Length: 248
Length: 223
Image 1 (cartoon, rainbow over the protein chains, first blue to last red):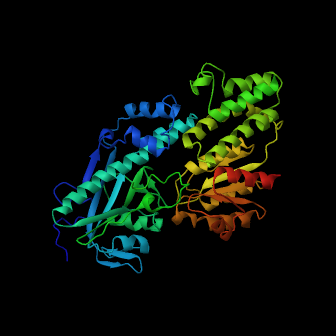
Image 2 (cartoon, rainbow over the protein chains, first blue to last red):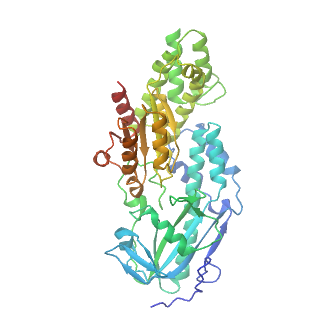
Image 3 (cartoon, each protein chain N blue to C red):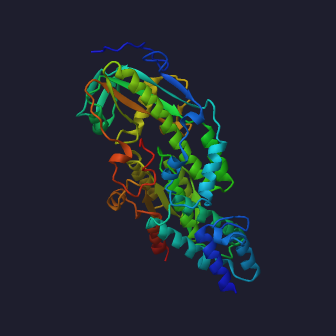
């Protein structure tokens, strides 16, 4: 049964404990390190004078987004979880997570629905670089955007974990529509459940988010949750150039 | 002399020496890059076709080969593509007036519902470097957009990219619509979760595990 204390507000991220539900970050607070970027773009063996290395050093010093990076979560009761059918019901609406994701969170009694964005600046600057023919630089900046939104989400997830640890509750890894066989079309239900929110993230007809550097999804909450590896850690595709993006 | 220029140009593209001002690679610092050498070659009477076939295509071939063997990674490949573009700018007028024939038109896009474009972009550059005209429809490309592009370019070959298992299933209706609009259109698909079996099962004519495989397939069908 529900032994959590949190306001059931559907129109905005509801802080489950104190002000914990919505977060703004400066770039400095969630910036990937030089080494993380180098590893991500598989450039550890490049010389110091390689343009990729020089660009990473320069752009890290230049980037200065103050409030565009934001995210949060909304905690909901899970009314029904059917692992066999790969479905959970929240607020009377079905999320068809698929059997894989449902299996990962099957011990959950609650779910945190989350959104997080690194903001529009990354897309704008990446497009600008592409237009002027600086395709390598655009690729690196795009990668920094991906790492940034994941790092921001890491912090939000840490907050969630800490909030529920005091109640002897564990949280699962985070899972997103489009990955682990969770159909992308479920974005619509997910956004519907979250409702209006302060992140400014919108959804297109084909269920893609704007700003582009955004993530959405679900985190299970329960007393008896087990840890499951996710994303690149369980993917065997050695040739995928995105393999480091997913929740490392 | 001309052969020497073509070899130098090929080397510039392979190692990403864009122009005179580019400080990289260090051993070529202060030397002309792909931009200046292409200009010089054209002035010396090297034909645009020779530049394309004997310098750019061979250089991008080497780059593609090294990438498929994990000897280089995306940043190096993009630097080479940038050097290739610096050379290609000088060839564009010859493509436009028809004095240099390209192998054909290649239409490419990431399937609807998917916004991943790194693989698509890399392949586009390799295809352009292999002597094709590329029409890049971008990401999240709807069926209608693919069909419209094929109707406007009925002899084109189409490439469709997807990164996710949840979006690769969108490729089948795209292929069906393309084949229904212009039946003889050849379609190649690519992306991390795909396999040759999956490609065949959705009616694709070709599958590229990596850019180099895709280029080989294009070479085969255009031969």
